[in-house]
Amino acid sequence: MSSARPASVTIRPGLLCLGLIAAVSSGCYEYLEVPATPGLAGHEVQLSITDSGSVVLASQVGYGIEAVDGKLISDSDMRYQVAVTSIRRRDGQETDWNGESVNIPHSVVSTIMERRFSRARSTLVAAATTMAMVVARRAFGGTGGATTPGGKPGGGTGPR
Image 1 (tube, rainbow, N blue to C red):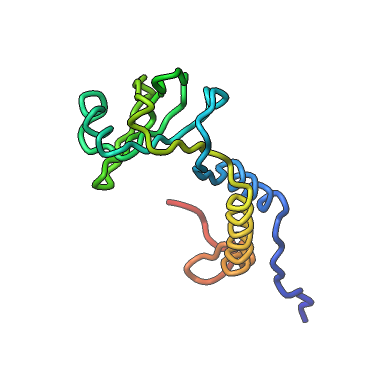
Image 2 (cartoon, one colour):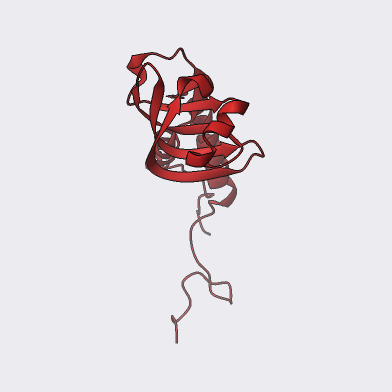
């Protein structure tokens, strides 16, 4: 008579930590409207462009621009200088850029928003990821042994 113990699902703390670190390090960001201040230089921003601004900037960034994302290099009395990472057109299409510098007059910007880390969203994503990993481990964990087509664990002779 065998005294085999029932298989129990053991969740490895290392696996959970790895998932949690991955979820938190990728993080969730959001854009929050901020007043235009010189202290924003060096920060990731999104500039919403007015209708007339879309026409003014057409030769630099293309037609129908709604928003410009990038790192604010400088903010003078008359213009923002932005290392552009992406632009969004009014039809919803987005185009990635490689940090090209674009000068944008203040007069064509309707709002300026700063990209900030969202602790609440990141925590929610980390919790959901952890729960998904626990559920997946319990659903698919099994005993971890492989079987041959005959059903006997370890009874195969290997590849031929």
